[in-house]
Structures are given as structure tokens and as C-alpha cells.
Length: 363
Ligand code: IPM
Ligand code: MN
Image 1 (spheres, rainbow, N blue to C red):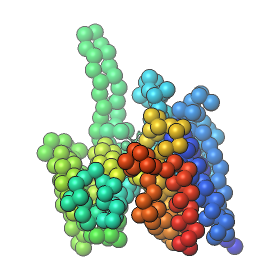
Image 2 (image 1 turned 45 degrees about the vertical axis):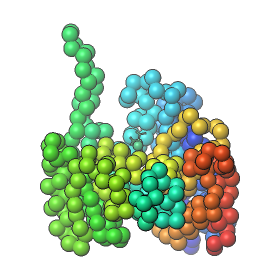
Image 3 (image 1 turned 30 degrees about the vertical axis):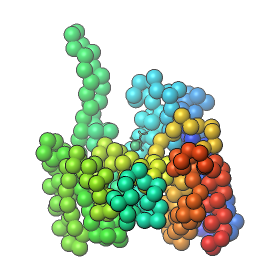
Image 4 (image 1 turned 90 degrees about the horizontal axis):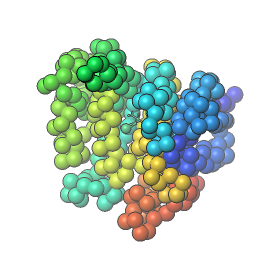
């Protein structure tokens, strides 16, 4: 019997609902064309859930995620909820909570720039002549994001705040393994980023990654300090393959790699746990400044769906079909506001429709 799949759809805040709408259109087309048994169920999360239910992560949402085979998320947060204390902000109380709850320690963020699309990059043509294909493997449940203590302290005549960076060896080992495995299916290079000239956690990071690399003799490992890495990536992105990062460093490096493809609105992500259960979301955020204008780029959301089909449902062909259709649509010259000259561009909905046209043509 054909397997039934359940996807929990969490549109969230900002441009989330608009771009999610385009991804849902694609799910619908794929279901019809390929006779797939995929059920979707929508749940509230983030700021909008605070407004509607008084909490960023309602019980019903968490329950819905638990009984699904995968989670597709839009984006979370916005100016309306920025004045809340850090731990009550929707980013922390829903997104970071969910990451930790399901133990999504793996975060895969691929940035691909085809050579034929290199004019979309903010970098000079001679630098991106060949395009690039980088996979950022970010550790997602450790480091400074989750270390305790993390608080603001007011004493008599002292006022300070503290965050804690902590990494256990097992956390470094398990994410390093993922990076080497990914590289073994790509171009056999891992660049590990740290700040081991200063930080203790980085020293342990580097030592542990070195050790794990011995098990993958075909993969070439190099290390870069974080400050040097951001510079090297801008100078020559084509020489990178897999970039392995601690949590905070990966947050920054993945935005950098994303914008080098033309827009962070095209950067998808997969957050996975040991069992392969996953949450898929655009890495770019809720972009409240362009919310509701029908100009957001839906590609990151659509490519996140593609990652979901690959990693959670093993539907590699359909995942490739989506990727290919996105590339083809861009190659035809269709551009949303973010990647356009700001004079001639198509809407969020039109971009979704064009990608659907390519999907239908190419199959
Ligand atoms: C991301 C985002 C999140 C992060 C925020 C919203 C908490 O920037 O997924 O990259 O810092 O991880
Ligand atoms: Mn980020």
C-alpha cells in the first residue's frame, strides 16, 4: 500500500504566510500529478500565536508537529513582539524551543549559484565566473544559543549581562560526522570554522573535528578562523564545498553565503535530528518591511519543501524536479523584487506560478 505522509504547515509571521502559500500550491500540484498521499495541516506559531493564543508555541502546534512526518515552517518574529524580554520573544520561545525539543542538531543550508546566473550575485563577475555550490552545516542545538547562565544582572552598582558558550565533545563529534558524510556525497572538502586562537570551545571544536576527519580519509579537511573565513568566502566562494560551523558562526556564515547567490530570500534550510525527523524553513527571516506586499521571494520556501521531500520522504526525484524548475525559472529571467533592478519584477504569486509552469513542463 502507498505510504501516507503528513506535513505540519507552520506559516508564522511576516512574509511567512505569503511564501508558504506558494509552497502549498506546489504540494497540491505534486499530489495531483504523482498521485501522492500527502496530508497537510496548518498550525499557528510565533508572534501571531502570541496574539491569538497568548503563547508563541501553543500545545496544539507542538502536538501537531509530533504527529507529523515533517514540519514546513515559514518565518517567525517581527517588530510587534521585539519589546518582549529575550526569552519571551517568539524566536526564542517557539523556534529555538522547537529546535531543542526535537533535538534538531543538524542544520543544512545550501547556497548554489549557477555560473549562468552569476549576474544575480552582488560580487564582481570575475569572482563568481564559475558560480559556486556551498553547503553550510551548522550545529543547531548547542553553543551560545543554549548555554546557561544567560541573563541580565542588576546589582547595587553593577549592571551586566551574561551568555555562555558551551560545547560538549559529543555535540561536536556528531555534527562533524554529518559534515564529512555530506562532503563524501559532494566534492570531498570540509572547511571547519572556529575562533580557536581565542576560545576554549573552539580549541575543543578543532581537536575533535581533526579526530573525526581520520575516519574520512577521502575528504580534505581545512580549518579557518572565523574572521578570515568571512573574508575568504567573499574573495573566492567557488573554492568552498562543505563549511562546518558552530551555532552562532553558522548563523552568520549562512547569511553570507545566501546573499552571495543574489538574495537571502533564496536560502532554504533543513533542521534534522538523529532519527531523520526534520523541520524545513527559509533561513532569511520574516522580513516585516515587505510583509503583505506580494513582493517577497518564495524560492527559499519552495526549496525548503524540496529539502523536505528529499530528507524526510526520500523523494529525490521530486526534490530534484523542484530544484531544476527553480533554476529554469531564474534562467528564463523571472525575478522577484529582491533580485531585480527594482523596476521590472514579478510578484510572489507570479514567481510561484512560473515555477509551477516549469514543473509541469519538465515532467
Ligand atoms: C536563523 C535565524 C534564527 C537563528 C533566529 C530567528 C533565532 O536567524 O534561523 O538563522 O538565529 O538561528
Ligand atoms: Mn540567521
